Length: 299
Image (cartoon, rainbow, N blue to C red; front, side):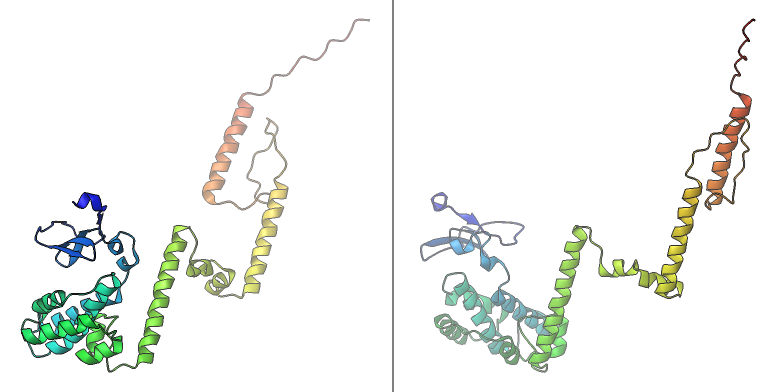
């Protein structure tokens, strides 16, 4: 049956895709097999891999935020008479989430959520509210959601909520903090992209600049520039003095010539001296053969 429908496996993050034969739903010509409240197998085009609703969804995040608030305050499901505010926010988010996926929410889904998170709520009130919300779901702002559940700044920051805002923080302050957080996130993303291409960070290339080096040396940039130019001229003169080839023979004096060669480290000087000595010894030990003088012609 399902093979003829070109079923697509959803991108839900489930390690175990175990299908319960009793959890199936047919709606609007689309058949879905559910695991909990997630469509594991479906032929609904809105649940196909790569569709937009698989990215961030504010309604999914808001339901998760309400569940986090309930857990933080009650240590689990709500066992007090605060269930009305939680139900008002969560029911509308669940209904709007279903509408965003191209289907209409059913009261059974809302009642099931209330049974899991609001077990002390009266059943008749929950059913009436679920039917009302499914008929006409409302879009609740983050500020209004925070007012309904009485969210405060301390709780808001401890839970790191994004879709429910506290009532004791000005909206302008929240907007400024959100912009700063976005700027930091963008900067971190750009830095990762630059590191992949081998580019240096601003801190790295500024640390290699002449201004940073002058600051470390305790001099001005002009003094550092003059010092570099003097060093370059000394190196150029040293190379000019040593640009001619020198052949070693038995009559060539061997020494380090410190006045005519560039400054070298001790290890380099010793290695060069050893090579020169070896070459001189070889030249003295094996002098070139001298040819006999030409004979004078007889008169």
